View 1: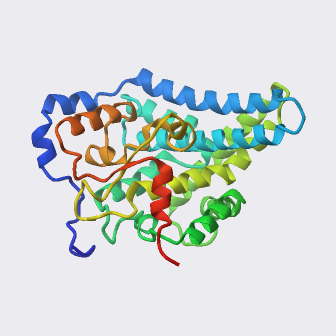
View 2: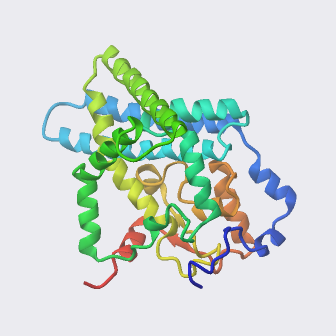
Length: 322
C-alpha cells in the first residue's frame, strides 16, 4: 500500500483490543505520580553521579576513559529527559495537568533546549499520520537501510559534534526569530523556550560552581552536542525504520528488547517499547513492559515488529550493499 493511499490516522486494528479487556487498558493507563518523579530523579541522579565520578577520578591515564563513559551516561540521560518531556506532551507524566506541564518543561524540556507545548503540537501529528506523507517524522524512517559506510559517517558527525552544532544553530535562529517567517505565537514559544534553556542551564552551572566543579558543566554541553545526538539517532532508527508493512500498526512501529546495559546507555525510561506506545499512546512509560507482556501472552506480538537488541538493529540498518 502506498503512503498516499494510507488512511489518515494510525489507529491500530481492533484485533488486539478484542483480546485486552477494558479494565486491563484502564489499569495500564493509570498514572503514578511517584513513579514519574522517581524516573525524573533517577535521570538527574545519573547525570550528577557521572559528573561526580569525573570530579573525583584520579588524574592519570584512565581519566579520559572516565570522561568518555560520563559523556555517554549524560547523553543517554538527556535522552531520558526528552522521553519524560515526550510523556508530558501526552499528559501522562503527572496526573495534574499544570504540574505535568510545569515539571515537563522546567525539569525535563528546558534543560535540553526543548519545550513541551511546542513538541506536543508536532508530536501528536506524528501519531495521527504515522507513515503517511504528513508524518513529520517520516524522513527519520525512510532512508534505512543504508550502507555501513553511510552509518559510520552519521555516527562520526554525531560524535564529532557536527550534528549537535547544526541543531544549536537551528535552535538559535528559531528561538530568536531569525530566518523563516514565524507567527507571533511561534515567536512567543521560541523566546519562552530559549529563556527556559538559559535559566535552567544557568542554575545547573551555578550549582556546579557552588560545589567547586564548574567545569562539570562542560560535560553537560559536550554530551548534548555529541553522545546525545548519537543515542537520539539510534532511537529514531529503532522506532520506525525498515517497516515490513507501513499500513499495519503492528509492523510500522518497532519495540526493541533491551538488556540492562542498553537501557543504561541507549534506551532510558522504557523508550524501547515504542510499538506499545503507539498502540496506546498515553500509557505511562513504567507500564509499557506490562503492556508488552500482556500482548505477548495473548499471542498478539507473533507478527509484530519486535527486535532483539540495538546492536543487531544497527547491523540491519547498515545492511544495504555498496
